[in-house]
Image (cartoon, rainbow, N blue to C red; front, top):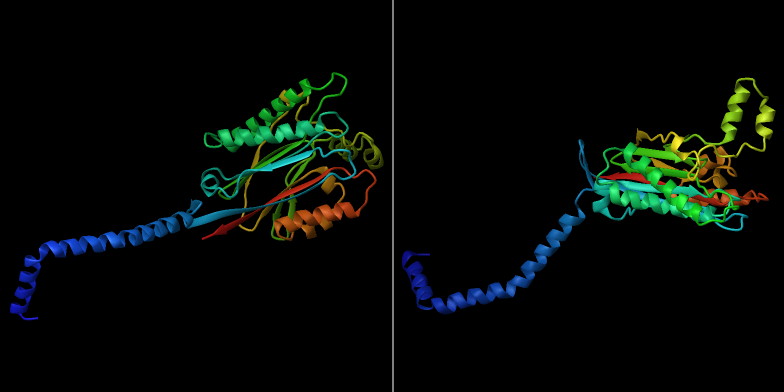
Length: 318
């Protein structure tokens, strides 16, 4: 465009600047809703793509998939209880990780159902209130067990004096940024499923362990150890009069993407063989829990105990 033509354009704009400015203003007003919508879309995309955690390998997202199955068996009431922290709250998972807890009320003792429920609720409340301030896994899980014990003591005070002491087993796992920590009391179990390997992480706190040790030392025969009616008596549990003297050991290991962590009551592992369990846990977590329950029920044991299996699969997404 020649110089004279540019001058004509500038003179036209100056002559009609009011209408020119007004037109530009109206155009901006018309475009504002569209601009605001685009900004919201961009902000939403940024939020949904925010990684849950950060590692030395770059930005990664730790994702946890829970599964569970529970059955009353052939008992009069369900005395198992369990709970998960909210794995769908990405902000909480990023800072807190995920927690799972299982408690098995002592069978045959009044208040077993209430004891297990109180234990799970106490652990979950403690985790929600203290996880941001916890100095270590040892502190967090040990204090959670202590709080669960106090909750069961409160249940005991509501029971008749001749009802026996209500009590419960306890298994708690805490997974955060590829680190698994756990604590257990009683004979509920925690397993790690890594690839094709199924590993028992806990040791049963029952008299059977002591009998087997005596058999290894030659103090009694293996047959005597196996035949004892006291094998299943718990030597450590929530609600025990000797609780303050128990060693509350917390253990931690690194885990890998693709690993699964399973908690189960004795109604599961007491009915399902290790080989059957090995096959069942190869499935996705919910299918694995369902399969374990079906395998236990298929045995049609006369006094089938309550059954609970809960599982968390660990996944990493970049």
